[in-house]
Picture (cartoon, rainbow, N blue to C red):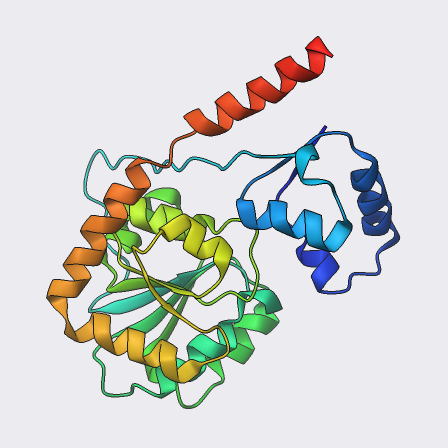
Length: 250
């Protein structure tokens, strides 16, 4: 058995011998778990895996409780991106979108432990120097504080296996904007604003909407929190145990 998180290296045309070996072994695996329906569908269409060999076991979402207030490291309103600078994260579209809304009061805050060359390139953009902050690594408590104080979390990805930042943001009570990918829509279920991943203009419109419409922002926060409450580990555990029992019985 195997658990498949995503096939991102395959779509990025990874030629690593180790990854090719992994795919060959995966194709021969009798039963496998996928962390989203989108990943399950990708296994079928990209690797030719029979659907009956795949069980969807979506992760649950948990965030650490703050026993005492943690002051946000950012002063003033901001949009939040957290994650890696990998190409499939599509950060360039978010940067271009920010340039299209220079009148908004929010700055863009980026959290993530990035290589120095990525940070230097990011901060060298003259059009965003005064509206961009890179925090580097943030502790779980500080991340939770950021999630609870931002105008919105933005996830502009081109491909994902699940989209944990979307789930975490909703659980923390943050409004969410994400690219219009089936896997992210599977997570948010209508509780986020979405945009085509190649359109900075439509992302900019989403940024403007949540910046200026406090009522909608509160509605998105409330709906997202309710959606996150349903995303427990129970279903994943039940599906996993069922597959193992059936395999042992056969």
